[in-house]
Length: 429
Image 1: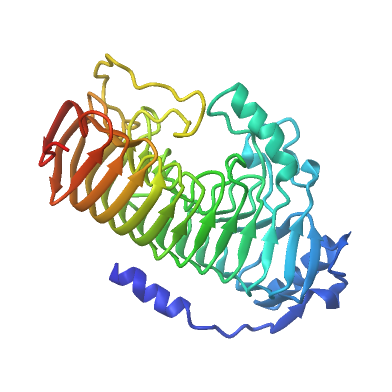
Image 2: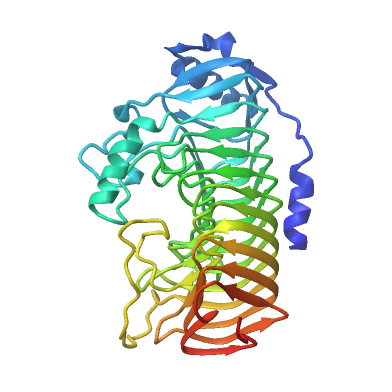
């Protein structure tokens, strides 16, 4: 934690840029919202890179563009009143040589960077992914095949980079995920608003993937999928855990699927802190999700000082995630008589989780903690937690679950439904 805060203190200091400021209008951008400005903007970005870095500046206006590509030591300064607007033509985003291929990796994002250092997106303006054209067929495909995510572009995709800052901007209407730093170190997301319609499919806000040293703070997120999702889909050379030292603090989560870890956890997740956040009308509050074949070790996770209102449910720690969320109409039931299977590198392991100073009201159930017969969820401690719900908190295939000075109150039946679970301090409400 001290190392992360030290990095952030340094990263907030403005650095000198060798190449000065590059005005996109000086390179021919019109900012009229109708003329395609891609060539002019990319020319400014390229000149900035050739100069060894600098600020690429967007004065007020609407800049229509296809995908853009960043260089090291580049700051995108998007002023208040300025909007970077993506085209909504699918062919504009298809990578060269990707014709006929499937998967989101076959698309460029609206803003792209790889193997970079010192990247900043800031300024008070807006980046709009114009995702509406993608959402209707994506939702239709998901309704046909529950859990299916139709491949689409992401808004901001930064890979294998260090010192990445996204601050003081609005990200909205991405075709799918809004901001995905992948295999990055030293990432700061501060004072960012992320917006997408409540039912827009797979519009995750912030998804750090296989990242180290991440701070997400003072953000307001209202989207159609995970508000934040920490993903760890592969091992990282030289690190025991692909994801580690991640803090989420002082954020407001509105519509969305909550604060998530997973479902990919193969590379491992270690040392996550979520504190001083507010959740209102999210489908989940706190969620750790994985399944056989996609799992790894998720440990030392701390949630504290949270207020949740009208969430569904407050807690979801599950090793049976089936790529659907609480609000999906075809929610798959948990297996009734599952037998233990051999433990492999893809077996989920959730342990050492602490939840403290939390209040929550739930639309339906209080939550669930469900491990596997061969890999129980272990050492989960609730301290000073108050959950009010309609139905029980389900705990299954779990051990070392403790409730200290905590209470779960439900309208219907018993407060807890336990199966193959060692739980202390549950009482009855």
